[in-house]
Image (cartoon, rainbow, N blue to C red; front, side, top):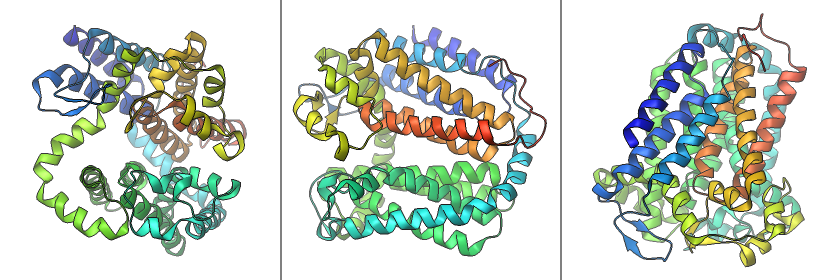
Length: 423
């Protein structure tokens, strides 16, 4: 079955590429699904060690054809989101993106001021001792890592990933427009959140580097290859350090030198682990169905809530009513929405498809900067949805939908639309 599914998906990807000549959110999600399916199929033949639903170690997680078919269905839905759209050749889109930089310059100052303000709130409220050293995984990204915990600081903490991504995006735009002072400001914000991500041994640090690589790949006029390769290399290093840090059970700035040394020493072994880590979502998703999870109605409702936990109390509800594969392995968003019921699953799938389509429409109307940011973010949301609960990702999806809606409704096309589409 695997080769039939891969062949069909390959044909759908080729068909979409004939219409959409810009590296798009569909390309990223499609390639990720292909990689996940290959990892899932080859898991019984690979020395992958992970934790199953019972908390036991074994060579591979639950394997069945239904897991492949589920991701095939998601692939087909994502392809359906592109139907009727035709985007100009990549070089034309890149040219539009570079022209768009001049139009976005007036926003760089206010965006930088906002990012710096939020970063300062985060710096002032973070627990300095926990930042220096702690032994709790992801403590620094939760409210337990705050010395000052209230509604404002908790909201800023919840927005950390979003702020870091915006700062990375602003850094590239400022550099491309020659605004070195603004670029320095954005760089300082990125470095703060990069340090937080590395100290937390999470994927956030890799996300910031990946965003910089994606935006520079479209916008940079000079040294583009060097910037992209360098950012991707840093993203890979951040992932390797995250895996090494998790294995040690020690986190914080104090352990980063030791983590870096251990990472370099074990790099060959960790590279396979990185592939397994990036594609682990398909295992987490399908293993979750073994538990036949049942969720209370309040948990389902608040999983779609855009409010921070400080306002709707979801953290406490999740602690009591949440279903996990293991203490260290949460239920994936894909498993959750299917367990919630068909209406919830349809709402989540349609929001993903709508975000993809709006991102492509933005590119077709010349808003390439926004399209690259939104498309990259939607891809990262999908990766998170395969391994983390719905609550962690749906609020981000709503932010992207709001951003794209505002741009498409109020923004002026850069030129006559290169999208021939029936929306």
